[in-house]
Image (cartoon, rainbow, N blue to C red):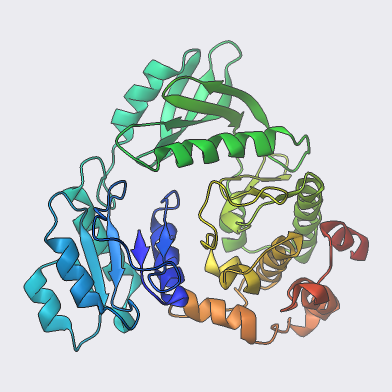
Length: 397
């Protein structure tokens, strides 16, 4: 849970956390807009509290910190203050302490990892619990031979497996619904929504879903194993203009199908675009997807998720997003496929977000100038100035 008055600072912390722990469930609290937390607030359901010094005019952050640290069984607290309050904060001895305008990603993640083990069930950064998860998964899912773990969090595990009846390799994504976590029900609901979102779509450039299983305390998805690696790795080796355009067409076609189902992806990035051996590309990871016709009943209204390098100006600033936000993200990816460079870079997530909103759309090299108009139309700062649908990308090309 992040508690601070400044929305930009809350967003900055969110981006740092989700960049390292992509499946982190984050609640953001504005003590001015929502009112100060009541005296009986005990932090229940949170593994860690990130407390900022900006708490409105009525209270300062040190006072709030002093109240929290006195409470028994309160979650670990990491405080983000100023140089002026550093001495007072050190005397209160929170689990972590940073100067808010001097943050670096590595030190922040290291500090959070050190604080997190104080709460049972959370592994520090870099710790592996894959074998434990794999053992649990084997007991849960019958009919599959587990090959190796591909990734894991406290809530879920992703594994490469082989279906015993057909000897076909698949990816198993398994989520446990545990009573220890108050947020686990929300995570479970998001997991099922992810399945329902993808399963509704039959498209050659969207990952195929084979099966869903649900039990009292877990769910699992069986999906296509995409063995060609992700687009990020492919780009590192350099892409030809022909391949960049080919991939853009395929991704745009997938997005068009997604949007036709009234779904937004919200986290388009090269790591969520996988290749098959035949060279076709497939859109994966709908964990942040949101049906446009549904309001934010599962994730907190106003929370910002995604990857700053590929995030539209409106998403980066917590505004309402629609299909044109995904189009902007795809424009960023297309620019990177053509040039091998990200259009905007910065030392902090908020610096990158600022450039998305304010910096001019970058120019392509002269040899690629024929695509500049398309880049301009996909990466326009205002949604109304962009292409209005993914189908228009295909038409333009």
